[in-house]
Every structure is written in C-alpha cells, then in structure tokens.
Image (cartoon, rainbow, N blue to C red):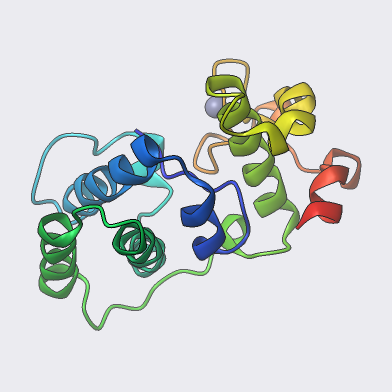
Length: 177
Ligand SMILES: [Zn+2]
C-alpha cells in the first residue's frame, strides 16, 4: 500500500511510474479513499491512508493524474476512476481541506517525502528507476523512524530522527526537481 510521490508534480509522478505500479495506484487510491470515507474497514490505519485524512482533494488530484497517464498508455482506468469520483462526491464534496506541508511542492517536508520514495523505488526496481540511484544511497537518513522505509508524515514527530532541520534537507532533490 503506497501512494508513490517521487516527483513534485502529480503528473510527473504518474509519468515516471512503471506499468505495474501505475495500474496499482488507481486501485490502491480507490481503497484509501473508501477507507477515509468510512465506507470500508480495511487500510484505515495504514500511514498511506492517514496522510490523506482531511486532504482527500489532493488524493483525488493525484489519482486524476494517474488516470490520465493510464489513458495515455491505453490501460483500463474506467471502473476504478468512476468509483473514486462517486466516493469523493458522496463523502467529501464541499468539505474544507487541509494544506499540509508534506504535500507542498518545495517545502522541506515534501523534499524529505520525495527522497524516500525515490530511494525505495530504486531499491525495489533499479532497472526501472536508474535516475533515483543517488537517493537510494542516502534516503535512509530521511525515513520517519527506524521501523520505516519511507518518510510517513503521520508518524509521531516526537521521535528524535523525525525532526526536520535545515541540515536534513536532501540536496540532490533541489537540483533535479
Ligand atoms: Zn515511521
């Protein structure tokens, strides 16, 4: 379960994902949105779900980019996408949404998140993500805690290595973004 965010724009995220992960994103995004809506019980406490609680509009913007890229590549997107739109309209239409730092392009917390996603993508499939080799070598210092392979924004900040300082900014990302 993951919402892959290896780039600052959702469109760029969608474009860079390989077929297997791109297609899974629409399904997993649908499951996350249904969990946030309280319509399903699974995945409710998963950190990928919790990071979009109150930010469901951003999740749907992301999934819209995923859907567009799937359409470009001639994959089937219709079923999951119509459920996503219906679920959003039924539960979140007209809501006021949060604007968290970890989803703000250019914010240090967003850089931190992106760096761990790049590093993990390279680790999982180096042949598909050679451009993230740099991050694979250093992303470990940006994960939220020792138990995690990503930076999950909703994990407790009281843990020492969850504090964000100017020294903890990933330098390579600033150049490649
Ligand atoms: Zn953690």
